[in-house]
Length: 19
Image (cartoon, rainbow, N blue to C red):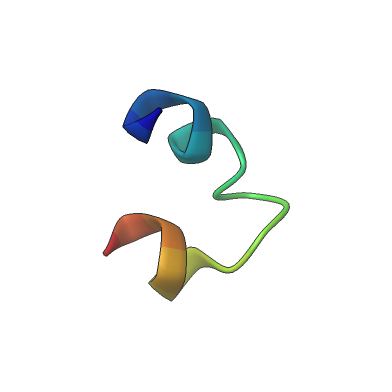
């Protein structure tokens, strides 16, 4: 699940995905 959110970093919240 963590890797799936990593791909959304550019589209979703960066500070939220990186953390």
